[in-house]
Image (cartoon, rainbow, N blue to C red):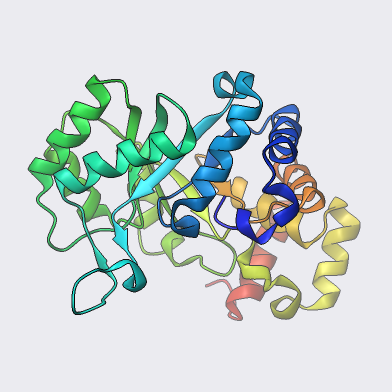
Length: 277
């Protein structure tokens, strides 16, 4: 929902509720938020849609995140972007997200960025209290490396259910440096942000390969990027940034398609611009 405000036509409660119903009809139930998306406005607009169609509350699963303070929201004299993975800050952020979203519980709440000043034990207690109170159901992290999430996991009895981090054809380094296997080994589901390779497929993959891939699979570039991602062990969940229905439909088609293994590697090789070793 990061780009919700880019679509003024969807920012009316009844229209957004209709759009959400459309996604549910497609089997898409999870909607990703963060307190910094539109400075909280994206959550507020989404909450108004839930008020306009209250039955949606029982059908959607909401993710939200906190811990980043953009420079323009820093009230200090330094006006600096910084992180706040602090117990009191997170307790307040959870309450504020619940209020903006007009719900009683958020399905999964994430630490948005690893904070070098993190007091893991006190933050863990705050999140545990939020789970006990029913404010959130699960906890996870975002943009964490293995030793960063392992350090936090060591301080809480709650399982970390996911890590939302970049993964795509244009950002495939985690597949060769052990990061992806660490997710599988530790039981964290990968929620892949920017899964469409930042729209770079047409400029990075030879047109002859794209055309052959289209003929073999029936998929456009969006579908190919999603099919490539979902074929990985554990089936990473793409966090689509687009709210355009045609783009979502193309992504869904990709999620239902298994690429021929040589094509999977051909796309990887083309994006890396280096031969598979």
